[in-house]
Length: 285
Image (cartoon, rainbow, N blue to C red; front, side, top):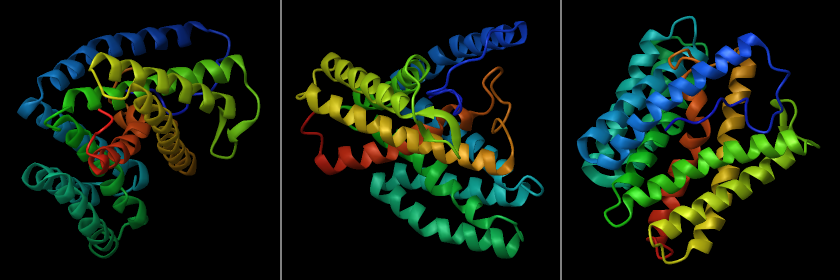
């Protein structure tokens, strides 16, 4: 579930320095250690996967609350964590519909609790933890637990988001051009978005072919759509970090920042794709 720093896609890089070279080595080492572990648990599925998703969701929710309510994060963080457990528990008990209902019901409850009980300064952003983080984690788990194509569709989304990051970075650096959202993320470009869409579409087509999907061409189109949705998630987190004047959401992963920095786009893309997949009942797969 590791993605890139939300500021990396579509941006060029400054001339290399020893500090940046050391940071790059740390980033690569972290990815080489964590990547196989994450993918191995994804492949296993079952309770190991659900425990990983729960740990991932709770850590990411904690990062989010610390980001948007830095002065007094503990009480609203506990409330958001409890809501996250309920959302994921609803997924296990009643499927995707149960998780969706839990998010809809608990989000306003968390807002009121953060505002009234915790006297939080930013209760709306605290409440966003449930649809954004808990909903994203539930979307990932929902995809993996699909009886017919769980591993395939999960990897399709995961690798499409990774490919979006790589394609966007390459196209943004090589082509440049007009900025995508200069007030939110000044280094992102329209060329980067198109490069990300192309790379994501190719990645989705390859995964669909590898898993014997009925229509790899449809998967490629969905992959391009994933790239757009992923960039929306990226821009959203970039806007929040710019508002609070921080570079990273946390420091959990050496060289990478926080978990939220790695998965900002994935958290939005996963539930959107999961809903589309469930609504279509996967005839393309």
